[in-house]
Amino acid sequence: MSAVYAVLPNDIDDPASPSGGNRYDRRLLTGLAALGWSVREIAVPGAWPTPSDEDLGGLATALVSVPDGGVVLVDGLVGSAAAGVLVPAAARLRVVLLVHLPLDTPGEAAVLAAARAVVTTSPCTRLPVPVQVATPGVDRAALATPSPAGDRLLCVGAVAAHKGQDRLADALAAVPEPFTCTYVGSLTREPDFVAALRTRLDDRIGLAGALTGPELAAAYAGADLLVSASRGETYGMVATEALARGIPVLAVRVGGLPVALGHAPDGSVPGLLVEPDELTGAVRRWLTDASLRDRLRRSARDRRETLTGWDVTARIVSGVLAAA
Image (cartoon, rainbow, N blue to C red; front, side):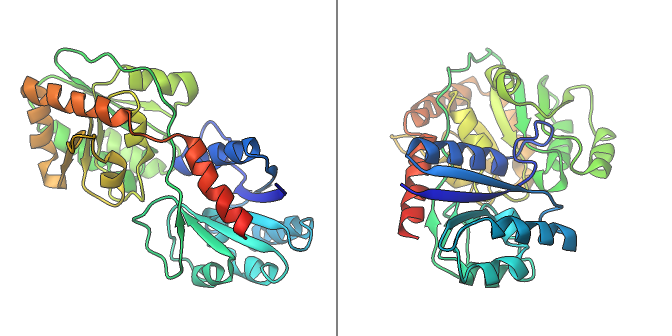
């Protein structure tokens, strides 16, 4: 296969700012290289998706190095905010846009229209152009060992308003049964939100900050239930990461989370999907109903067997790039 030039936010590998989008990009590029693509990364500094004129100038300069007809895979965080650069560049380059989340930025529609192809990470993403869906893969992991009481809860995601840790805290405050809940995620994205959140936490909820690699794996291994009160998710990689360890998921029914949660082969749902005002009751059901915990754990272990790896994601995107 030929070369693909990957245009990425400059913080893709920053351990202090892990995100689902960054993990997706890194695993995708690794998979493309394994399939024979010559992957040439163009990491562009900038406050994406709100770039300055200097940021846009840097992107334009970087693209000059790509030969005419080159295949350019552009992360949507950059691409959706750079119509003034990418639309003209699409006249000589084969631009493929990778959209993790539609941003509705000025010019996004023009970039979508100019791209040779558009890849989205969720079937729930709605765009005004044809798309190819390449959902995130997941790495198989050892089964977590559940505790008898099921009282170790885990919430994973950057601590920010759209992830809903505040409404989860409010829901958990109304749960009288004993439990612990660990919030894992960057504390630097929205400092004001984090400061306000701290005032709503009781001593059963802890903020662990951003974790990656073995530390994140250990957090999953020590959990009984993944909980999410997110206000919006195009997919929800944390759900499949929990299921890969046989851990059930309790989540607000939003965006692509029901797709990520999916079904076990027998049709059962490996967790609970609820409305925001049902979170407290759902947590209490989990903590007080041993038969429910056993049933959801069996379903999660069965769902684990149906999850696909990052090699599948890479093959889908490779086909899009080859066609472009």
